[in-house]
Length: 259
Image (cartoon, rainbow, N blue to C red; front, top):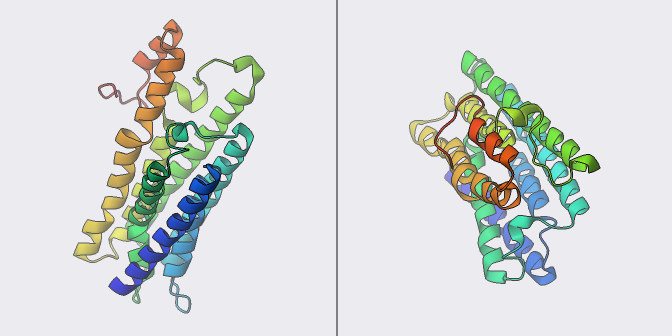
């Protein structure tokens, strides 16, 4: 099992390395998110037991495929339309900084997938339990939440009448980042659904998946960057300040101290 995970890690970082070379040569980030999504799909597919896949494994894989296809196509379409990703403004022309970004994507992919990779290598099976259904239900909730939030924000921004305005409609009334909350729920759900099939050390390492996703989105490359951008764009707008004060940063109706 360890050798199989090692092989998948090697494939993961080989893909990111090739992506970095192309990205640095052409100074573009247009295929960054799409590459990440395709890596999720490829590693999940390669981790499956091709001859004896179980119903549990097939459902788990289908959840990952749906998530990756939906998010990958959405982000790729968005960057083709906008032409660039503001996250790369300071690193686009720096090969060393681009390398770190691509390397971090490799870490993100493999850690996020760990519980499902462990599950896919199991040769034994048992009937579906409440744990499976609870996990997949949480995944479905997160998947729908993220998809709806992305769609609402995209529709809002594509309306010329909303130019220069901040998004505060639909799910965005109740959370400043409902799409990220959906993403966290999705991976938490897939950890739960796989957890009762894992050994003790696999459960421990697998738990890194939802923890890592939550940490990255909340403190590194997600919320902090977008919050700074929003303050730069709308910080002098009293309506935005009121929205910021009353709207939770992540979990609807749960207002933690400001980030």
